[in-house]
Length: 503
Image 1 (cartoon, helix red, strand yellow):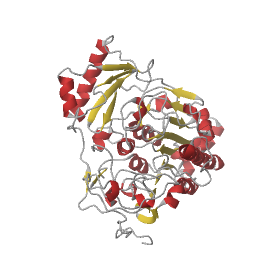
Image 2 (tube, rainbow, N blue to C red):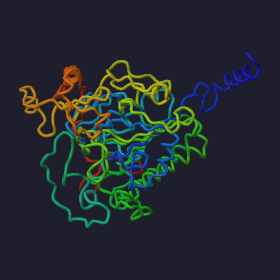
Image 3 (cartoon, rainbow, N blue to C red):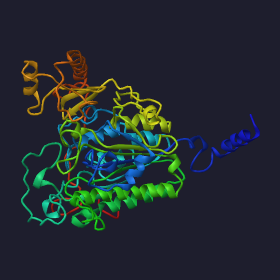
Image 4 (cartoon, one colour):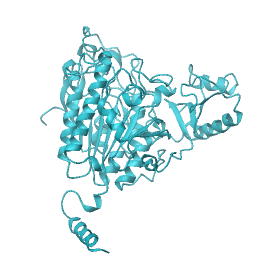
């Protein structure tokens, strides 16, 4: 051993027991995961936008890797459950759609989240933004592995219309209406029965979110995110930054309102890009950029206001436009700059990938569907090694992908038992697309590829035996449940006992 190497070895050994960052942690990265709500595949310039200006994401992509076949879920809560647990949503959060305020069900506290895995590995953990995995105390981020939480616990449209939750910035607000309880179930309160939007800090309601708070929400989250980074610059941290933007209703900040070429939607996309610039600027200023992995993504495909081209379909569908999301991974010196990968990847892969890099432990007492993506992110492998990816919409398995091939098991239209009966009766011909040559899913090539259809159908049958084809199967784990769920803010404006500010 040469003298310089010997001195460094002794120095690291001496520093190991002292200070906030041990020598053994020196090679472990910080993690920042930025999750945008309802962002379209081509709503940012690195993925082809001609309408929205996103200079900070341009730089992120130029210095990192675009993941062009990265999958969320058709809607919000399932996608976030996959991210947190490393599992298909149907396994970890078996619900038909999304969660609503004051729901009796949520992500089971017995699930092991990526935050818990990283916290056990010595990381400080913070969630700033939209949670959407349950708003009762048992389901909040502070009970699921996060040291700190600031945010609206669900979508920014899940409040009363008179507060601006059902209309975009500038629209005339309606008069209060009587609560309509039709359609409410264990998933929570819907429509006119929804209570005021709460802004939480940890487990305290610090504001009622009306129009003013909606318009300032991106800046508020960004300020808090930068503050968290600065506070933990000397130890490893995991920052989860799930913006409410660009979900309806649209409330771009005052500095961005009317500044884009794409109306309110473009204004909010560009403010989101500004937020990313602030976060990245803090990393560079604090010289944390060489040991931080940043992952930028969206929970699901864009709505009709978005641009998902060249993909087909929108949010809430299992066409590619409903579930494939624009994603960028960045870690200078570790992830090749200016790279692009079409490897099949997903929200489920975050937990096993982060766990490996952090020296954490992937839960071994339950099935995990995600895979470690580091060989792809580091540029050492072209393929993720995933045999198949399954497209669920609620309990229904609608499609399966293997390599470039995607087999639609249930055509757009009726779903559930009747659709399965039609399929079993041979009334629905197989629909097969080759995504490498037909990313827009316009040509059915099933007739010319019967062997591929047979192979993918066998994969679907295998998954159906696990999680079910049209209903929740044996592999779906129990939901978390509470008795007598209550809104965090009542319709009368009264804050729930125990959640008052100043406690």
